[in-house]
Length: 123
Image (tube, rainbow, N blue to C red; front, side):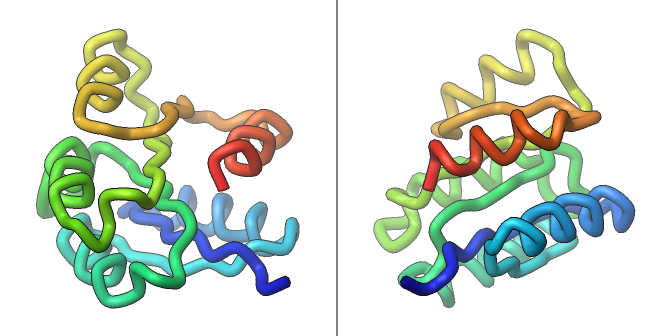
């Protein structure tokens, strides 16, 4: 069975490397984008192959909530689960993300075992 493919949309290089290293060490195939629109375009072009999107909320070009809305509005990407991974742990951020259509919300700094467990549940 081929490895599950996860798209990480994250602008912080250290956070991107950490998530990518954890996922590849646990058998996942990782694609990366450092901006929201680039990530959404990558997802659209690879929608048949991507099993999950990990999304930061604060991106340089477009808000993460807008990225979720674009993913959920596109018929080719709407069924791909999105997990927000953000340092913003305010109730409003979580509520807005869930209302926009994300499947789960993980706060930074991440607990590696919890992170992997929640990803496994989503894919």
